[in-house]
Length: 278
Image (cartoon, rainbow, N blue to C red; front, side):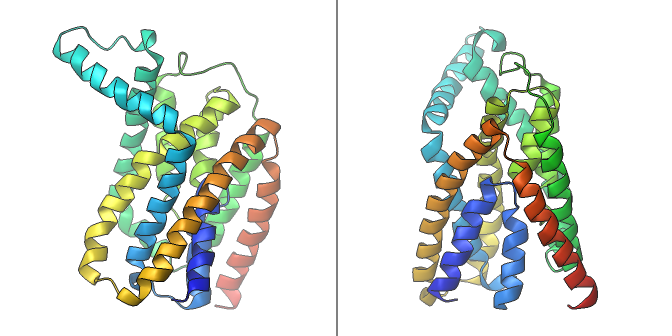
């Protein structure tokens, strides 16, 4: 793998992870274009995920610090018999909702991991994923926004958003787009829906890294790839930061439909290529 290829893949990972265009779908297409076998870049993929995770920590470091502090306070309250009192502590409730949302994501990922991996080798499956992403982003643009924040959020909303995140493991299906639609469909404000979508990406990305590391280590790490890996990781972090900031503005300003047209066009091309050319 060359530095140019690593930088391109890092850029696509960073932008695609947080913009509603599906990083997994784009990376699958680029791997086929570059002729890179999936098992050759497993460690590289893990490091790209860590790069995007860094960008989330930079943007939401205040929220993360508050959640960590609240976690220890919650443990103390439970040990002393004070209880949770979620409605009285918004940060605590946010942490609980993140945990609840992560559960269906983990169940879907573990149960259907082999099926999802098989889709990466199918242009048709990837293309259908892109088309699905276009549809949900088109719908998201037309959903109204209520005044529901963390105080009014229920467990059902967290489960729905987590389920949508689990579905987004399919290549071509946008994680940020799916989780955003899940939040908006239950009446969350646009600002809180996108914030929650990015915060629940933290355990999701960490979980994928933990699952991939053993296989990556078992396959070995080519010392010649360390330079490109570092470059790709840095680019993924920088582009991921830019994508998060951009997504926040786009959601607030109602510009998501632009992405629908892009992924529809890409999805149609990918399906046609898979059916008649590949």
